[in-house]
Image (cartoon, rainbow, N blue to C red; front, side, top):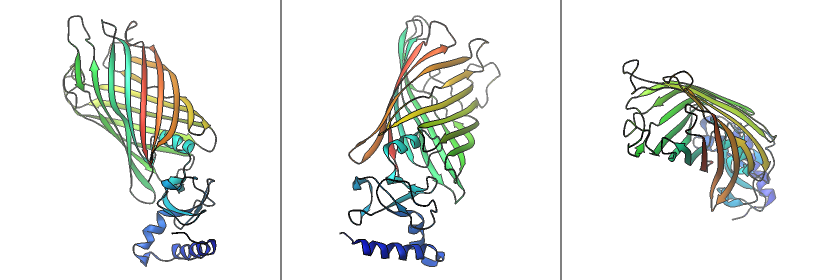
Amino acid sequence: MKFSKSTINWVVAILVSLGAASPSLGQLSPLLSNSALIKGLENPATTDVTSPLLYEAESDPAVLPLRLNEDWFWGPIIPSLGRAAAALSDTELSKEAENPVTRIITLPLRYEAEFNEGPYKATKDTFEIDQAVVPFILNADWALITRTKFPAVIQPPKKLREDWESGLSNGYTTFFLSPEHGTTFFWGAGPVLYYPSATNKALGVNKWGSGPSVAFLKKDAGPWVVGVVVNNIWSFGGPPHSSDRTNSFLLNPVITYHFGNGWSVGSSPNITANWLSKNGQQWTVPIGGGIEKVFRLGAQRMKLSVDAYYNAIRPTAGNDTALVQVTLTLLFPP
């Protein structure tokens, strides 16, 4: 079904009037608060998300719920982005996927190969959900952003004549409280919940844990995205010098340059410290980076990243020298 431009003009006028009316409109009021008229591919004419907005959208109408005619569409809004989610270009979506407190659902699936592991100089394989994001809008001012990491590991022996180990390692979820009014600068802060999910002692600890975490990210219309995530996790219980304990620090900087059409290069190393290790054996500092591309498979939008890092600082000089990561992130803009 198609509509003429004059009909669209009448619809715009009526909806804008309704958007300024009282909330007694019942189910129509949430519709006006969470949707928009969309056209083309430019920035929105306004960032007032409490009434219908005029947007420019992608040329492919399949990503939008309703096509009104050749020019106009109806689609959902992400309030914190100030525009319709379906109108995000590949580059904008790539930037949003790097935001630790994004308002879109992301599911990163990662394979990581760590080389020169243990006395046999073998490869440690990790398959994991790597910081999957599920956002919850609490009210007009605040959102709760959950980020979950859950690894499965195939690990070489740590000592001669020991066996290979495989199973789950410890996962955790971060709960960021984040303000809803960010446009170029985003932040969140909250606790980490650490799970006793390790299937044996070689792969992790059988204890719950927690600690603080903060995240910051700066992005705008330019090509650069810069951010950081920091946390420290302590396990609960256990004697002070027990091996079945965790006291670990994570510093995850993000710096990316976007070329357009969903292509980008960047670096996001996991810099870690194990405070329970001996002096001189606490830090692991990777140096490197990779290339990324946002693309579409049918209606599903996703991002593929390939990264390589060299551990310039590591607990043991001959071990864990380098790693390669391949990450496929499924993106679910509303």
